[in-house]
Each structure stands twice: as structure tokens, then as C-alpha cells.
Length: 348
Ligand code: GTQ
Image (cartoon, rainbow, N blue to C red; front, top):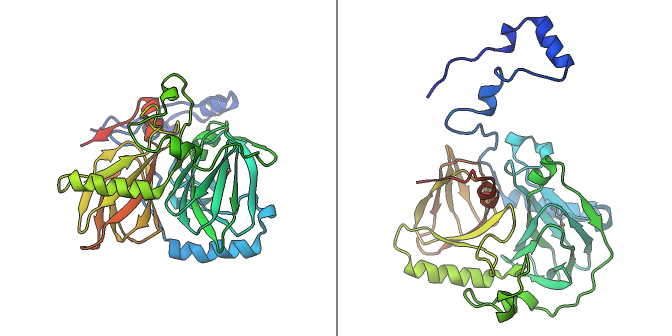
């Protein structure tokens, strides 16, 4: 489809244009096609890959260069060059950081308006306290820190602990609604396993939750269980069918945070899968295995702990490079935001 060429600013008398600007107004028509392009959005987000092997040494060096007290959160942000590094966006809506915590350190208690999650990349002994519950962080675990809930991080083990932070910061900052409140350390008033024991099995709920709903009943999704569930799902999925599980609020069955969605993908040995093209943008993190990703025209080889940006409306094919071992991926997307805005599209 192509429309008529629209008039440009140069077609207008200079004095007229000057008067518009002086009155804080602008003509729409010279900019209309830029903000409402035909067919597909303009996407500045590049389908980049961040390789963990490149970033890890710099993150560990940050541990030496900057004490936690001087950082509050010791994070290297994965910035999409297409969006301007200084804007700290992995995609237009998704912020991703790699956070390092060393043994004995604490990242102090705070709460904020953006939604956040942690996805553990390496190390043992890390924990996050959310709303008075201490949530152990093992490799691959997903920990929710929903908007407005107190959270602080600590480390009782040995060696570095690193996790991926995913936040809807670009959205919340973009609508001038991003802020944070500091607090003293939380009193831990719940037993270890408080939420994971209550919501241990999909399809079974604590009976009382039928009458009394909470906004965020389950705050930790242990990777061990996600991985096992993917394997069981793979066993009953036809060849070529995408093996993917959504992380949901167990009480409502819908996405667990307002703007961001989370899922886990298993690529069976030798498998190549083209995902449906969607309106949503995403970030994919490799938990285990090696393979190739084709995102629009960009081809990347990926390995464990690498992270990829998937722009909105992108073509996306994943393949497992191994003929003997599965590959496991974790995906963050902004599909819940698109659904709430009424703009979610799944193209087949
Ligand atoms: O750990 O609470 O990467 O507040 C950015 C902002 C992590 C956190 C980030 C945050 C946090």
C-alpha cells in the first residue's frame, strides 16, 4: 500500500511555520507517516545478542571497582544500540540488567513503581526477600518483585551470584510514573517455601484462595520444576510443535505481572522452530544449550547465558545446534502490555 506523498515543512511559508512554533503547535501532515507508517511499525530496536562470555569479566570487575554501598544495585545494563545506549532499553519496553552480588553483600530494601523480575544466571546462596518472604535463588529460578512490593537481595554462599533483571522501566519511566522508596530491612515473617509450597502443583490451589485472592500469590518459580514440566510437555508435543510454558498467576491463570510476560521454551535435539510473528517485543535468555537464532535478517549463534533482543513484529526462528541434547530458553515479552492496550496481534 502506498499513499499520496504528504506536504513537508518546506512547502509552508517560513513566517507561518515560525508562528506555529511560537504558539507551541506543529502541523501533523509532515510527520504523519513517521508516526503512522503503513503496514508495520518503525522499529529502532536491533535484533542484537549480548554474549555472557563478553560481559561476565566486566561485571566481575565492577565487583572490585564499585562497592555495593556505592552502587545500591551493581548492574551492567544490556542496552540496545538502535535505541541509544544511554536510554537503557533492551527493547522499546523492556529493561534488562545483569546484577552481581558477592558473598555477604546486601542490596538494600526498596520498592518502586516499575515491575521487576530476577532470573538467576549463576552462583549459589543468593536470595531476595519480597514482602517478608525469603526466596532462595538457584540457577534458572524466576523471582517476581511486582510493582510496589518491598524487595532486597542478599548472598549467604560462596563465589559470585549473577542474575538477569527484567523491568518494564522504559514504559513506566516513559509515562513519567517511575519512582522508588527506600526502606529499612524487612522482617522475615514467612517460612521458607511459603508460596512455593502453597502453589506446588498447577491445577491445585490452597482452598481458601477460592474466597480470598491476593494479587501476587506465587513469587518464585523454581527452574527445576519448569525444566521437568518442559520435558513432560515435550513428550506429548508433536514434532515441529513449539514446546513452551507460560509462567502465570496460579489463582487467575493469567500473566503474573501487569506488563511483562514470561515463558520457557525447550528445543528438542536437532529441532528448528519458527515462532509465530507477534506484535510484542521480547528478550530471550539461554539457560542451557547452544543453537542459532534468526531474527528478521540477523543470524546469531547462541550459547549458555547469552541474551537476545527480539523487536516487535519480528520474524523469529530458533534452532538447536545439538542432535543429542535439548536447549532451554527463558523469554520475557511485553505481550501483557499489548493485550491490555488492545493491540496484541499474533500472525500465523
Ligand atoms: O534489584 O531492585 O537492574 O531496582 C534496576 C533497578 C535492579 C533491583 C535493576 C532495580 C533493581
